[in-house]
Length: 149
Image (cartoon, rainbow, N blue to C red; front, top):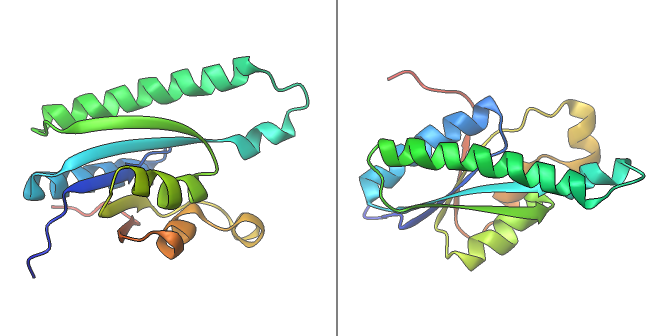
């Protein structure tokens, strides 16, 4: 098989599975000399529960996301990658990642961790990884556990 990935998106949400997806993304990007795009989508659905939502909450979430992604970018560059970017978006991750961001950046591989949601949450809102798999127009790799080398 001669398939090479050129633009890889890794969904980062701060979870351990996202860490594993990030590490897998580095490996694949190295093998393919690919661009690595690290994405964090601030889920605005969580703001709906806060009656007096103001810009302070969004600003704090964005600052935390920026700090987290800067750290990941540094790790990726320390691992030898040179084409690393990140992007922070607001909205629903399960819609923004496969429909908007993948198209905007001509992504040919999305890597994300399997979600840690419980059965009730999956029933009502569905898992992010399930939606990405269903709606992405490119390959999707779901990382469940960290494999030992």
